[in-house]
Image 1 (cartoon, rainbow, N blue to C red):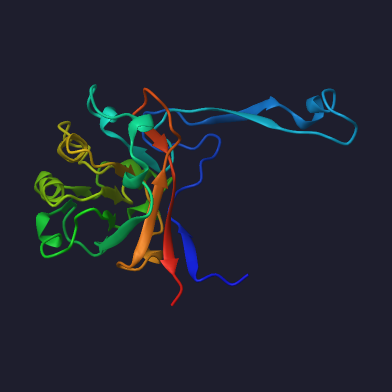
Image 2: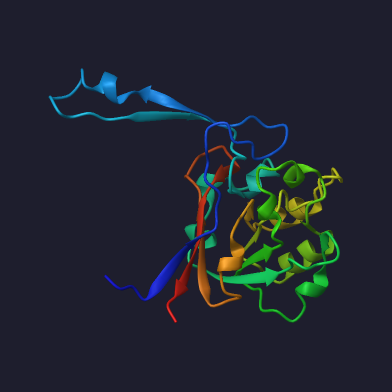
Length: 225
């Protein structure tokens, strides 16, 4: 069936043993119930696999809710779906930027209110290499984060190792955005496949109570031209 849109996947695949964030454990993916063992539980010719995964929440491409930073912030279960799905998307291209810090100048004059603002730095090209986590990744400056918050951005995402400079323990971008109820998506990939604007963005985590972060299946819905 011919569709009048395309779905463009912009998230990493979660795999057994994969390191996302230096110092955090890799996911362990195993069988809780193997297909062979399931044969003893069902009729002849019927078998199933039930998987088991043990992982930290900050694995793959994930979304931060305010609870990630603030004890009294909204957790994953409390997020409004309207803040995660069917958002008007805007991609800001920064692959050729001369500075690691993303400044407020790249935001000036743009319509940001209620939109998913996605920063394409191409740092995802270093995914699962030593360079990805070497501390020299692009990041959002405090001034740019404040501008996004004041402009009413709906969601902010980046294809980098962290939206903050990990050489600085203050984490101003996380603090400012999450204090203002703006979800953050980190470790995006393939943003170069999306148009600059004119698409819808989705990044919906599992509805878990008492957690602030969880992996998402992030994608853009792009109308066919």
